[in-house]
Image (cartoon, rainbow, N blue to C red):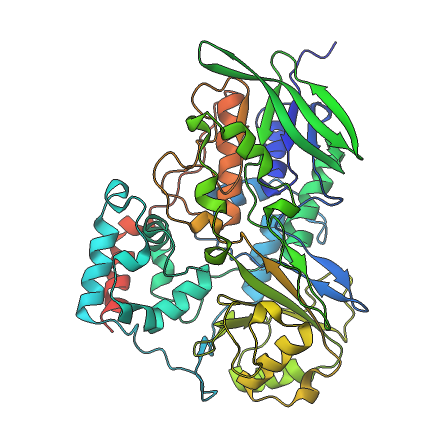
Amino acid sequence: MDTKPKAYLVGGGIGSLAAAAFMIRDGNLPGENIFILEAAPVLGGSLDGAGDPVSGYSLRGGRMLTTDNYECTWDLFKSIPSLNHPGKSVLEETVEFNQKHQAHSMARLVDKRRAKVPVTSMGFTMQDRMDLLKLSKSDEDTLAASCITDWFSPAFFDTEFWYMWSTTFAFQPWHSAVEFKRYLRRFMLEFSRIETLAGVKRTIYNQYHSLVLPLQTWLKAQGVHLVMDCTVTDLDLTTVDKTFTVTGIQCLRQSIHEVIAVNAGDLVFIQNGSMTDASSLGSMTSAPAKLTKRDSSGWTLWEKLAEGRPQLGNPAVFNSCIAQSYWESFTVTLKTPAFFDKMYQFSGNEPGTGGLVTFKDSNWLMSIVLAAQPHFPNQPADVQVFWGYALFPDRVGDFVPKPMAECTGEEILRELCGHLRFDPETVETAICIPCRMPYLTSMFMPRVLGDRPLPVPPGSKNFAFISQFVEIPDDVVFTVEYSVRAAQMAVYELLAIDRTIPAVTPHATSLQVQFDALIKAFK
């Protein structure tokens, strides 16, 4: 008779997949005792990658990786076998790939004259340097719910540093000063090489096929139950002496209502919130639909659980202002090499070595990145794929007289070619699929302590949160690492696993890193 507990994971994103793996590897929980409940027909959450060369490929985003940070992520993927190289782990595969494709951008910023901006200076004034130092030394209680704009003059947001930092990490001026400070410290190593993106690492393919699929394959081989088309609508909670216990999971499975009994000793892990909730795709002839959380269910469960329970966080802080949290990406599928050839001639970077190219004077603040090809396992040799995004999709374009949010794929390509001064024939056979994401940077919204719950909230007996919306000291959201670290923390606490979680590497305390950053700031 099986006396070990069962574990239910609500949501099939990278956090849940990681949690399942940690339970098996470090908690000795049998895979057949683990159930991942996912509303969509595919796992991976925000780490998606789909399509084909005929209808076009699509990626909502591309997360930046580093091997100098991301301690929990690589602790996980050193144990997951590669699907492409038998006998090697995903970590080993990724390290070898990046040794062959080292990033050194030679066209990080492009101005309105279509000239590469030589980043010989961060563009700081002495006041900017003093303001950066003041913010980096302030504690989070002092920063509280302040915005980045509360700490800097308007001129700071026109420096070369801001254009590079904000587009690398997707910051807006109105975002959280606390999160900006955390990024400055977590990625201080990148500060001194932000113009070349030398610290950025990529996976062999897109992150769905390189991270999600190998992990999913391994979990399935361990017997984990992957339950698709299953929307969790509520949890049955019992409270005794201020201790919360989940006793049942209310769900719609293939549109039929079910209740999953959660027995004594069983565990429940919940993805609270979703940065890609209500995403919508457009086409070459249509703009993406303007959806909100009313059109999806990514926030509903957290809102229900948090009502009247302040220890479970405050989702309204993050999902109440789409205008401050949305941006738009686009994926382009090419069937002739003309665009890639011209980009190589212009930038000097072969695909996979350049990182982001940002058009700093564009109204949309548009950036593109050409990854090493192929970017999908089923991508033919004569097809190329690249990705781009814009931080200001509500602004009218420079070459297309309408906001990006209202543009078709064809119009986005026209705007891009305008900035590059490329002839339209360069992309005449291209398929551009735009994607609107209303909550993508909602994790960056100004907050105070308590707005995000702890992975295992006070009073919880058998459930935990895993997402970008939990509180982890020192670490930064909008990274794969944050979800994986949250998963590891939650699993180790609920299963009482006696193994040390890899610490956040304290680059900001390194005298060498501090010295390099100081030299960079004074150029």
